Length: 610
Image (tube, rainbow, N blue to C red):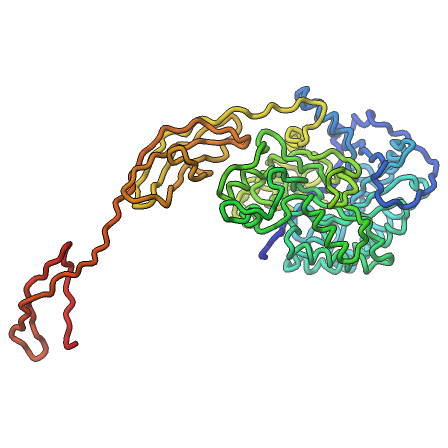
């Protein structure tokens, strides 16, 4: 398999609220307690029976955005503001706090203030490995992939975080630590890249060190980032990934026990579930749907497929069957008017997949601020209905509204560089030479991106409570016009027509021969094939949209295939009267009487001897 899953997953350093949003912090309680709590026993699923920490800084940014939209969208944003999100420690200065946000102690103290009589989980992201995001630019980090960089990672970063988390004051908090997004998966798919080759030993050593230090704190739970189905879903990636994760776990002091679970789709938009593509093994029109251009022979169409797949492989690699899985559902909802409402009826595999999938990206590797994405499932513990995935929770690791990366080059002191995958005008070879589909005017990774946040809330699926459900699209496209037939052959008729219009968008066309559907097209042309010579045919075309609405039929066009030429099996008569004229030393002139033929004589072959 060639470059399956290669991506530049740049994004996500944490950012502060603006001055305007910071004023809203008073809406969130900031009372603190210094009473130490006894640490509870380490449990199998830290999310079960627990609440989760709501970051007041992020909530303030959301509430501020709600003041600049209509009442319906504002009501949904009020609901979003109450949801728990992860706190990102994206560089050393983030631990104490910097210009981009409050430090770790601030969040731990606020978690104590939010804690009721039951347990509370604080979602924390460990994200500062040497040579971070070796296949990206937008989220490169501060530490180089060198021995000196690793030394700083251990002493100035991990040790400092562990010192705070081990404070007895915070023993009553459950800390769920997402370990180094985009690190180990890059060593599976992108190890041929020089920067990833350089970073590889430091990724392994850094993750080992983080697991050793954090596992030693009984109220800390470690979840290693596992990429997503569009990255590691292929068997050729998933198997080596499970082996790599097992090797790293076995290198730690506690072995497999140092890992509580894995987290998928971190800061990504791969759907939790593809409801109209539940079986990746089927074929349409004789073509396996997993072989289509969008899935590229990957069996894992969504994160439910992927987490079940990986859990099985990880247990086979030595991890305990109690291993838990998390899915980041902060941006993988894919709702809105473009969401399909039924499975496609096309008999063309690519069309069938494109009309049925809820993931509307141009390519599964399009990771940066993708247009059309929406918020997914709200955070919840032990979600029902996914027993094969062994889910501990749906979580929001990526706070909705934080940018994945800048749309243009923006000078900064965070080590973040301009990644063209975040540029909506860029045609990327990584995306089969298609535009990136990124949202324009994006700020640096991790900074508040209000335009994208509005889209995420608008396109949420399930629809977020607090507002009304958008009305279903029941308006059919306009009928195609100017249907015309081109030059026919004995077995084909080429057709063209003028594009239809729709209140949302036209997604394709059905072509009918008489009353029979004979094909589909996503463009305004189609060639009917397999026809009978010298036969008259009548064609019509109907337009369709993502909701499955069909237009009225176009005006019919008639065309007649050409008559087939009869095969000539009758040979001409033999030439007569062959005579030789006056010769020279080197030539003999010949002449003869013309032959006859049932069609026509086209020439003569002259033989010397036999």
